[in-house]
Image (cartoon, rainbow, N blue to C red):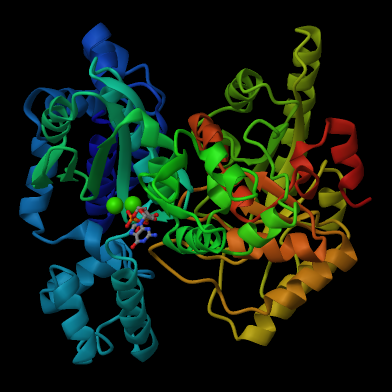
Length: 575
Ligand code: DGT
Ligand code: CA
Ligand code: CA
């Protein structure tokens, strides 16, 4: 699929145009990029079937963008983009990845001191050449260095959200090969870790050589690190590596168990085998020379006196001990979610109308859909004020009426994603908040507050009887910035006292709360909600990543409020 590649180029075009101070267009390109990113169908296929005209039917794609997509599909290049790059020869993707650096600042850095890439930037910051520039100071210079350090730390790690669709595509291709009997994705991808080092595949086949030849010649392979008779390793175009291993059917379970990991989980499991005078390896579970299990994972765990453990739990964080005691949690399932409570509509600049989002929610079998647009403090996101919220209420009532007439089970709820200001107050009048079905509040500004002040800011918001949910409670963005400083235990205590729900944001770069914090919340008895925070209707399916994170955090169905039917859900919200 070329969707991602074209989306990336459109993002960059947006950045280049923003850098040049062009109005509106940058926003249009970025919105189109989000659309392409989220699109489930392959643009190449869409084009093949209906040409440029059909491309223009994709929301947010106009004639000139359709032309550019056509050009890329035909030639692998977009001249407009190449020209922009020639005009300002900098690595804009790399530079704008630094937290706090937008296109405008990148332009100043290029024009004033010739910074073209991350290396230049780091050197200039170290030599204090940035702080004297207009619009910069000692603090921004320090933040730039911190941002670079953060980027370096996350280098070589890929977001599960970027990797999973590609891994699934490779899996499908492998399955199509007639010599292949079975394929599984293993490793950290199967455990649904938020970031991935490399992708591991396990295959059953009687003709491993055929599988090897096929694997190393997959489209997208740019380098072959090694190719043997039953294993191979390659680098993919997107920059990550993929390993494959072929095993005979009788060892499939033990190989799957071994290559799923984690390494720490495996080491502990092997110890338990040794205590029982058994030997566990990727080839099977052996008593002396006799293989007593190996064909499937269940029988391996069973032979060790245990129950099968969900891959998301296999991190050696107490799951083996819990299993032996018969106390494994019954973690929330991928189909337990009854609705999404954090979706942005075109009222605040999102890509789709409430009706369009509702259509997808119906297809997903949801009982309810919460529209939670930004509020007024966030001007760049077209935040809604009190009057606009009241207008939106009317539209939602109308949609609900139509849904009822059409006998659809979906109910649209009106929420909002309000802003927690510096003193913990909310940027919307309380009387307006009270008219909503529920209120989400989140921090969208001033992330670098002192720890105590930040903690107090969030606590104040939770004590507000109108606030039901705290969005992305720790504020981290993977590969971009750490959590803000705050006393999480104190937050949990207040959440429990006030009955405030904490969000598990499903966006692959957020996943906030993360697995460890979810586990803490569960232990304290704080309720959570799995939301997507989608800005496009196709992003509703990102819920999968939030559920995966919840599972990794040992959350059970009752810990998550949006596993509840509508009536029960409404009772959970503060009165
Ligand atoms: P990653 O790729 O860094 O995101 O994480 P994993 O868990 O996918 O790690 P990877 O690809 O190095 O190895 C895949 C699995 O193979 C790993 O989860 C467990 C198993 N494995 C690898 N090396 C060892 C080892 O030295 N001992 C044991 N017991 N298992 C290992
Ligand atoms: Ca791996
Ligand atoms: Ca590997």
